[in-house]
Image 1 (cartoon, one colour):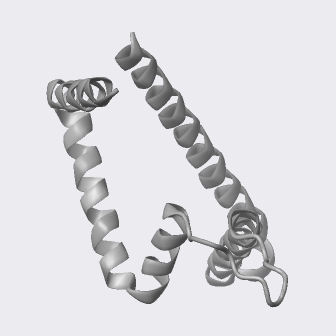
Image 2 (cartoon, rainbow, N blue to C red):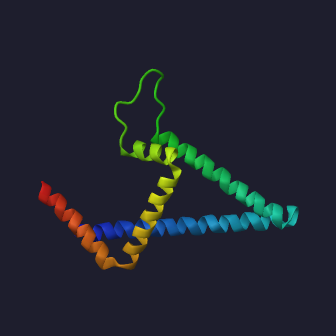
Image 3 (tube, rainbow, N blue to C red):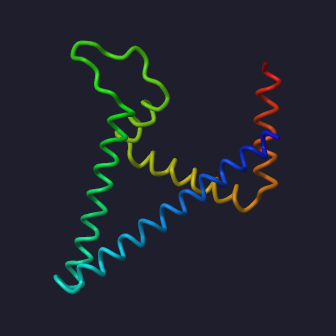
Length: 133
């Protein structure tokens, strides 16, 4: 039952990500097609890239502002949580973060290709948590 719910959530997230990707690609194509008659294909491509960069910077600034709230001067947080430590590691050692991201991508590829292995790993993790309680 829990595994089935987890799979449903994963499929829903994948479907939303695919839909968002399709929307972004077609919006970029529409912007490119609208700009080509006025400024030419090279500058249109540059404008589309600049628009994508602008949206990415704005979204990341908003998300990082929500994730990492500013602290009043003179007051430090007690203990950084796991998310803060991951962000600090990525900032301090970007190659390690890139390697970890690659390993996560490889694990996701294996998980998608071999659902039996994925279900065995999830079942083992769930069983070990239940046994600890």
